[in-house]
Image (tube, rainbow, N blue to C red; front, side):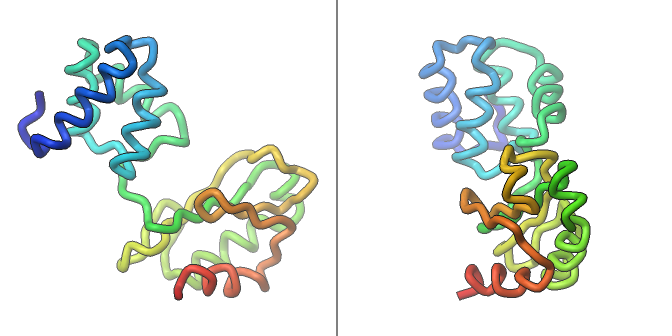
Length: 158
């Protein structure tokens, strides 16, 4: 297995893969659980998963880079996701993205230097009737306006 991971990290991945019977058909589920645990999927984790499942690292990398829900960079403690699907976009999502970027001092895809926030966009969260929608972690904020961005951030700055 990959030497740059700590023994307990290697053990976690081995146990995780074993829980899914080392079945490469369970790759997406394994990646979900690994990202839940590590917060993201760095190269070393991908290599260890590939080793356990006896598949090429390129297959793991292909899945990680194809699905937008996976990330290879660390996310902030409070990941902010703004829906930019059609309904949200036409109801002002672009202005909300701009305001979050301004208030946090980062661009979409970035993480604040204190690690408290990361900023991303989603194509659709399936709540078009509540557009525009912002998610912070698992919490959904409906019908958000640019004027509410400061208040949303303040909820997590405490």
